[in-house]
Length: 471
Image (cartoon, rainbow, N blue to C red; front, side, top):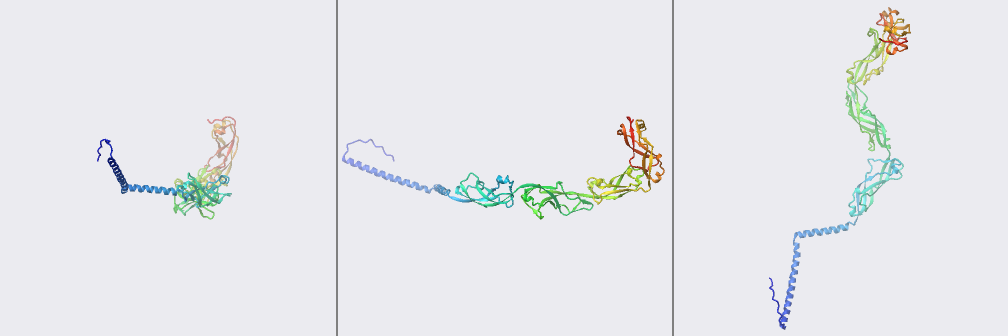
């Protein structure tokens, strides 16, 4: 309730009774003020306790208290010294120049080579907890190295990142074996090994060969390991049991030691690990042999010529034999045939077409000319003429007056021939018409002796004293 405003007090003259009333009023007002203050204090306590009846207030207060406790515990534990093992720290195998440069040695990795170590570190918990294997480096320490071999080396670890406020307590393993050697490259002959196979009937097979035509292989690795290689072989088992055509087959390159044991060494780097083996199939065919005739007389085809062997076994590609039915081994020049000279020998290898091979165990063919019923006579011939009569008037003089000829032919024909039946004809070519003395081959004509021939290559000498003309 609102209090009414009192009218301005009038100041009457105070009496003793009035003073007592005023004092009592002051006491009443003081008591009323104390009671009001007590009631106000009681009201405030009631409102604070009421907050705990609010679930949201209790939840927020709980979280806050938990956070304060966690901060307090963490701050206390972060300064605690702890030990931790960092696993799989890579080993750095870098060598000092005194070993890699002066001695030319390298670390040779093997299947048993240690690549990582476990490192134990100690430090403040909040530091150690952040360390990973990337924050550490491990390296080897070698001493007393004199050459190739395996050495026992100490492994040391240290901080490699920004976090360094910790200590390395131990490294496991603390010592490892390190192999040192020099790496070089060597060339090895490459052999071939195949499964069993055979040629189809009517064919023969050439020796297997590498398709690349390269029969060596380069291998790179430690010198000690290279020295253990005794042979290198390209091995295939893909060839069919019966072969009738040329084919290429995949092969694996395999290394063997002196005890014929396979070498599987990852320290060795091969130029190639696979090769291709070629098996060439050649068709077989027996061909008759023949000879050609040169400077032969009429009827020479009736002269018996015996060839030994008369046929040979030849191998070659099938398309070769589509046009090859007989093997011509050479030419018999009748100017070299007479009663005393009837045998001629021909090299078979020179007669074989390209890509063919001789399968028989024979290297040559012997040809024998049968001159039974033939006779040889000698004549001194003076009938020497020019093929062109005008040449005799062109400053050309024949120096040879008589030419001695040996003529062979059927007995019934040669018996009727005289020197007058034989004439020698000179034929000049452009090169032989220069001034000077020339030896000129001649052609022999035998009247009534068409089945006769001259032995040798007769010539005459002529002297050219002036310019000649062919027209």
